[in-house]
Structures are given as C-alpha cells and as structure tokens.
Image (cartoon, rainbow, N blue to C red; front, side):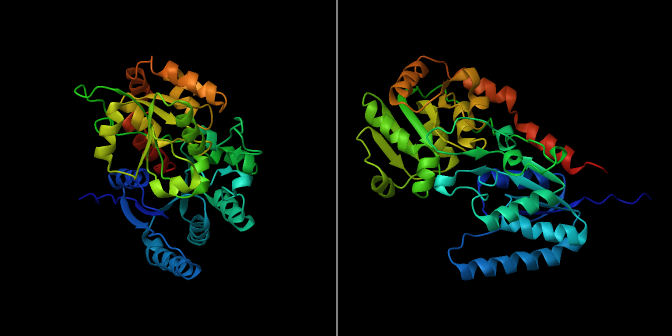
Length: 354
C-alpha cells in the first residue's frame, strides 16, 4: 500500500482579523493544513508585551510540525516570525498590505517612519522566502504626492537592497456573486465612499477631507460615507447637509447601498489596492478616483481618473461620471481580477521548489 501523502502545514498569522485576510486563510485551508492565529486589538504597552509572549509561545509550540510560515504585514510580528524562520529553517511568506510598503512623513504613516519599526520591516523582508504585495504600486510607485510634501510608496524605493526575485505581486480578487448589480434597484444620483475611518490620520489618508469639501462644493448631489463615526467626523470637519455618515455595515447591507449608488469615489492617497473600490465596481458603480497607487490600474477607462484635488476638477469629473455606464466597471473587474486568480497564484507560490 502506497503511503498517503501529507498535506503541508502552514502557520498563518495576522495582527488583525479583517475580511481579505480571512479570505486568504480560507483559500489556504482548501489546500494545506492551516494553524491560524489572529490577534485581538490591544491598547497598552503591558498588553502589547503580553501579546508578544503569546505569539512566541504559539510559534514555539507549532513551528516544529510546520512546513512554512505565513504572516500578514511586515511589522514587529513579521520580525518575530523571521527569527523563528531562521532558527528552524522554515520558509517565510510575508503579505504586504499598505502601511508596511508606504511612507508619508508628515502624517508619521508607515512602518518606515519609526526607526525601530523600519528595522523590523527591513529584517523581515530580507529574511522572507517570498514577499507578496497586493499591487505593483507597493513594489515601486512614482505617483504624484497629491498635497503631501513627501510620499514614498514601494518596497523597492524604501528598501532598495531587497532582491527583486523575492517579490511577486498577487492582486486581490472578489466575490462576484455577492457583489453584483440588482436589476430591480435603480441607480440614484448618490455618491458613496467607504473606509474604516478611525482617526484624523486615516481621515486624511483616505481623502475624506477632500470628499467633505466636494460635498459642500456640489450641493446638487447627495454624498454618503460608510465606515465613519458621525460624531468624530463632525469634530474633524464641518459636515454639510447633503452628506450622510453611517458606521461600517455587514457586506449584505453594503451591497444594497452599492447597488443604488451611481458613483463610488476613491480619494485614498496611498495604500495599495482598495478592496472597496473593486466591490463597488462589481455592483456597477462608476468609479472616480485619483491616479495614485493601484487605483488608476483598477479604474482605467471605466470611470474618471483625477489628476489633482482641485474642487472644480472633481466636480467636472463627477458630471462626466454620471453620464458613464457602470456595467463597464463590473466587466473590468471580472476580466482583470477573476475570483480564482489569487487562489491559483498563491497555490503556485506555496508549492514552489517541491
């Protein structure tokens, strides 16, 4: 009798539990034996140290039986994983999401800004078997700074000593049967943006300051922000009457909002490939966004790409977008980012050199 082949064992770690990370875990579980650890948020130095100890103990317990280590974001936890990968001679795969491949000095944004975090990221990248950014912009980007004095995006620009052959871009893909138009719902003249707006820094990084100004400048349109706290946003900006703010909602409810809104605005100034942009496009929202990071690559000719943040330029862009067909936006995502693509590419990468 031939021996039954054993599935490879993957240790999968993330310092947060958000949908696109959970989706990666589920994909890997289809092909490998996965042991996962997702951290809960912490808010003090004591709980941070306790968390580091938990991660080290978890690694110590499980690494001997593992074949490879997989970690989301090149931060302090990736550094811990890097040490263990070297000690135990294990393959290490690091997923790059945005702040670990971007630096905005005036907002102190990015692991590169803090010298200690910069060391952690650099060491992790040098140790990794593979570095897996979600967009080419996180490898190297020369886009406009869009109002920042300085903005550097791309692993190769921040850490030029990292070898090219380690890096492979694996774009996100999307659930086309969940995010889809509903022929029973007519598009309204509503404009929507979505983001996890936690503090004044993310408010600006996601372009919400300009979005609010745009709403004031275009009183003839209705604007919507999903993912913000109305009270906090009112502390950071004067919210006009034609702008509604609601907290994050479940995917099923968000889909219904996408299905009725004509335009999705993506004014993010950095961050790789925004998932909400593609989800909205699958629901046939016409996209309007800056030509920055991966946003231009995603939108292409299916929507309006803004070359600056002048309010009249944005208003003219919105007027053009209202005349466009959102079906073309959905078709682009179907063709360029099919659901099975990321799974196929990750499976190929994780099975290299067998």
